[in-house]
Image 1 (cartoon, protein in one colour):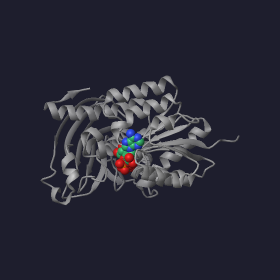
Image 2 (cartoon, protein in one colour; image 1 turned 45 degrees about the vertical axis):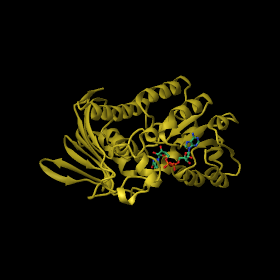
Image 3 (cartoon, rainbow, N blue to C red; image 1 turned 30 degrees about the vertical axis):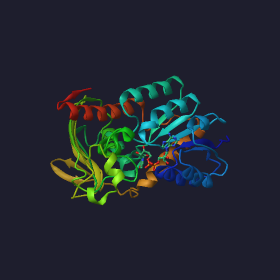
Image 4 (cartoon, rainbow, N blue to C red; image 1 turned 90 degrees about the vertical axis):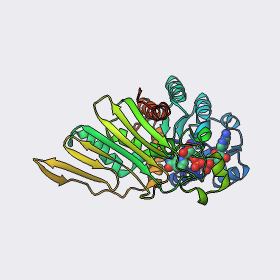
Length: 347
Ligand SMILES: NC(=O)c1ccc[n+]([C@@H]2O[C@H](COP(=O)([O-])OP(=O)(O)OC[C@H]3O[C@@H](n4cnc5c(N)ncnc54)[C@H](O)[C@@H]3O)[C@@H](O)[C@H]2O)c1
């Protein structure tokens, strides 16, 4: 059976778009071809078009979507435009790969996910850590029940400086600081490895350490717009009885590191460096498998290759579902609401 190349439109030709471009080019033009590109910035559009000379270019995503049929739209702008671009892409009949964080709030996420369901189109969020070899092993291990049910989950993301190369620190553009923009990766991963329980309540506190920390080293335009949280501590309860502690920090002096840990009934999984330890008759045994090393960019390329190959074969994308995406967004919203109101929020 002959499969056609997946025709892709990409909106937002910035830093992350170029990571996708590298992966898409390695697939070959008989499997994936970017036929439409969009960016407000002409220079970025021209640079992207040099990689994909056959692509139509446009500064307006509505014009981009108005052309020949696209199978897939990759949305790689900042989150304040994801909602409108996702709805328009679905209306144009395209499946969507949307960069994280998904939407500005759960109301937007619900609208996009329900439109996708009505139109029988698929939505993938770019939480690419699920594609790391260790993540795939960890999820299969939890499904096998070998180490029992998850009990206590920890997810953390601590960085020594805020990401100032794009306005992740500006709430109106990013929808959130360290939680929505970076900790979202390990939060999503930890919840997924823990077999995706439903959150029932959230409590969180947030702070802003910038510019007291890191301020003098950062350009003045960042100072003007920096209004997001850069420190968060949180606690989530899930409907299966498990619970999760969260920590995110953009101004840590100690570590530049993110990971997760799941304490289960009979063992513990640690995300990075990956390890699995199990209690066998009271003795602790290390059952960490030897796996291909985790690599961030490769996990993005694996994600793109997976959804493209499934589109070519007419198969459903299997690694995420609407309930998980909505739950992730609800947890983020509830953390911010809890921090604002100073109390626990029921979901
Ligand atoms: N999964 C990952 O590893 C990862 C890594 C980095 C960024 N991201 C996510 O990717 C997204 C983009 O981040 P980035 O670092 O590439 O940002 P960026 O600023 O480098 O790129 C965004 C691009 O979008 C363009 N743009 C903005 N509004 C537009 C509009 N209305 N129409 C057309 N183009 C528009 C900008 O001109 C810019 O070129 C964010 O959601 C971010 O969180 C994901």
